[in-house]
Image (tube, rainbow, N blue to C red; front, side, top):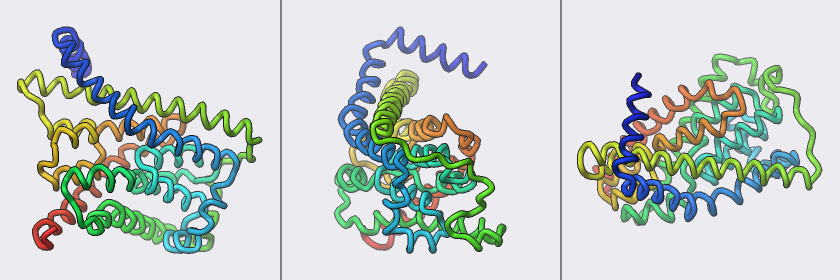
Length: 307
C-alpha cells in the first residue's frame, strides 16, 4: 500500500508539475553526461578487458606483496581494492561481481570487499568535492575518505580470520571450496566486444538511476514548497552537493562517504546478475558504520585541528 501511494504521488507530481520534474531529470542526466559517463565508461571497458583476458593477477602483482599479506587477500581481491579505491562508484561493486562470476573470488571475499571497496574516486574528491568545500589541506581528509575504509576492511578481515583460523594456511586461495569453476581467458576481440557491451549497458543504467533519484527531489519540493538540499544529499550525492554550495562541510563530507540512496541502488544493479545481492543489507550497514566513523574524524579535524 505504501508503494502504491508513493508511485501515485510521484505520478500526480509529474502531471501537475511537469516543468519542475523535467528540471530535476535534466539535472540528473547532466551529471551523468558531464561527469559519470566520461569518468566511468573508459574504466568500465578497460576493467572488463583485464578481467576477461585474465590479466587481473598481473595488474595487481606490484601490490600483492603488501596488500596480499596485510589483508590475507588473493590477487583478485587486491585488484578489486585497486579498482574500488581508484575508479569510484560503482566500479568496486562491478569489479567484485565480474570476478565472482568468473570464479576468481569466493562469495565470502566478495561480501568482505563490498564492505569497504566502493567509494568516490580520488579524482572527484580532490577535483570537485574539496574545492567546492574550500578544503586546501587535503591530506587529513583523504585519510578520512580512504584511510578509514582501509583500516575498517583490515579489521573486518582480522575478525573473519580469527573465526576461521584454517584460512591462514593459504593467502592465494582462501577457502577454495567456495570458488566457482574459473573461466579461461577470452580471445581479445570477444573480450573487447563483451566489455563494451557490458560497460554500455551499465553506464546507461547508471544514467537512469541518477535521473530517477534526482526526480525524487520533487516530493520534498512540492510538500515543503522549496528545495531541500539535505534530502537531496541523501537521494543523490553529486547533485545534492551542488545544491549545498559548500555549506555544512562536515555534513557534505559524510554524505559523500555514504554515497546516497542512488549509489546504493547502483551497487545493487552492479551485483544484480549474481547472488551477492543478498549482501546488500550488510553493505548498507557497513556504509552507515563507516559514515559514523568518518563523522567523528571530520568533527575532530574541524574542532581540534583548525582544518
